[in-house]
Length: 236
Ligand code: BTN
Picture 1 (cartoon, rainbow, N blue to C red):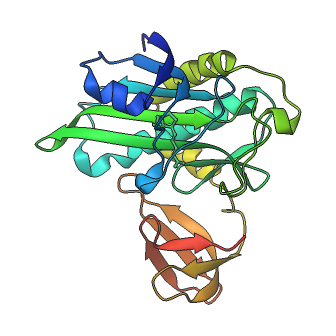
Picture 2 (tube, rainbow, N blue to C red):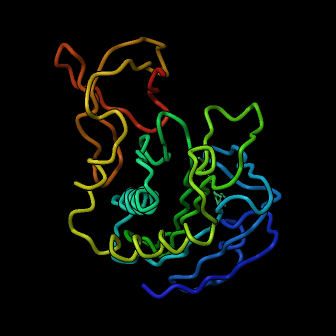
């Protein structure tokens, strides 16, 4: 993939900027600071000025059907994990696409799609990864950064690594298998809480649907339970 990196000192949100203009496939909008960084489910994404990587990649995945849109989530989270692995970090994907190291969140991904008919037309892949920030707002649960992991780097180095990884993943047939290999806590049984009923149970992640992202948990009694994002939470 050919990238065109547009670097801004300050934006409201790189995702918002990417949505405002008609940027071509492969454009990356990166900012040193966001005044209204967006997180998942309407949350804010706050990040100290100039310390972290914040960018949005514009792609035109016109070969991907709307019902298969989770593919883009897999690509983005896997490319981020692999970029961090190049720096010696063992990053895991907290389903569906949070980036975790040693049980702490190092980065997050916000993906926004546009579609026409059955197929996607444009996808904005927004990624924030903590690089040099060492103190965080107490309201942020469980944050970490490369610096806190004793790794010296810069947002631009990490962005370069991400671009290389994303290019090779974009057409990769093994994507889903690689995504599953990198899922956090898929190795054993862990405690989960059903968000609707509040019920606690032990289960193991046994599948993530490659097209919809639906999670399958198998309980220690062998029962399969299927969940959408935020319908279940892992008990830490
Ligand atoms: C999350 O809630 O975990 C997702 C956070 C995504 C943050 C990134 S930073 C770059 C891009 N621009 C935004 O406004 N949000 C995403």
